[in-house]
Length: 587
Image (cartoon, rainbow, N blue to C red; front, side, top):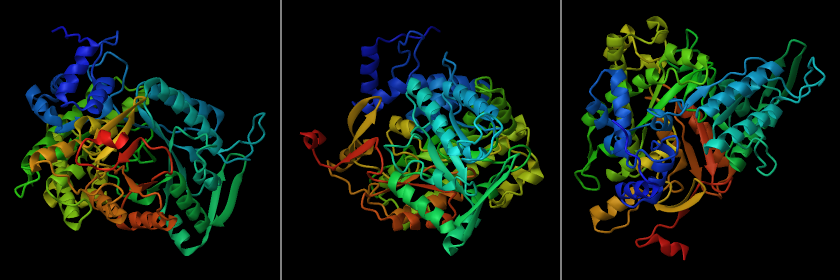
């Protein structure tokens, strides 16, 4: 059936009507996700048309009725990752996978240029890239070409960042590159300080994270010497510094510029579900929520927890666990279908092979703070942590049961080895009967990851991932425009309470240590990882950042990122909450 072509004014009017006059949500839908023809004309004017496109394509591969996926997608119960929303059914050459890890295969000019080529091709298809920059030799190391000495790993990070900036500028996507670094590389201090001066730093278009081992953290706490080393075919380069000196530089950098983030690497590797068969974890994706093997790929999607609340803002408010578990099962089936739908749309053949070998997916959540508000629970309160853990436990078990069912009907992922898979502490912690199901086979090597969900949570009108509500009213910079917006839940609350203004805690009002403990509680039920940022007031001292890092490590997080207000440019600017028109605040 030929698609209807909308005039731009008509598409804007229909989208704005659908979103109840919310200009920001309408703009996000039309600019990022609505299908357009080669001439740029809108073929979809409302999310309902997009949902039909996605459900039809996935149902054909999954072998289920189209209506099953249409129910899942409707009312934003489940929102696939942005690459799926944009790419599925699109005539453009676009990947359906948000996440890739690309190795720098050699510490050489050939290795660097190969990475640049592979990264550029991945960016061109809309994929984000993670890599380990510490593969490259440090500054001053001998080389065999006319350069005599290497300019160092950090200098090449600037080159990689520039590539990401150039490729991102053409498609309007930001933060498409993650550069991680080992805690034993001789350029450790240079890496930690690479972005502390935003005016001079040339690593502007990449996220930075340190892969910190338990040994490094313990040495820092004990103020012990720390050995740095790197071996090339020509020499071994070594140095020693105080571990505490590097630790203090990390804390200072995170306080001053919000980077690097911290990856607790022993926890990441130990708790992965498939550390065998060529799937051994070596790095992470752009936002750190998916640890992966070389050329690993992962598609994403998030359950909107707010969509499963019944009778919100009342004493009878409750979460419909049965419907949430049904949605989880269907979401696993949907994302597994995307593995096949996207197999010929990877930029590189190695990515295709890795994806089909592991069939890795990343099902997460968003709207957690909305869930708390609708159930009249303060974000970060002890009772909110108890509920959140129960929610993620149910999702985990429903997801694993569905993957086991899919394995029985379609076969397990090709690299599956029962004995090796059951060695994972995460798998061993599952209920006994579910461990028995896993032993028979799983369709997917890993299933769960909580992504930041930036644009798709805007589209759904809920909070991102597991973040608290940032602000009730705010200015949002998007697509070169500034939108005056309010959190969509605020309107629903006013309608339910006769115009009252809620007292929900926002990002800077939430106890940051409870925020970290919440993440740690949820990590127990997420087989991959959680990308989340602890927001801090401008006057937060460095000592608090240090304590937050140590709390995250000791509580069992796989990583942590902090953002102190004013430490770098913000996309969202909070405004004071008011009971009347927020335009008054701008007069």
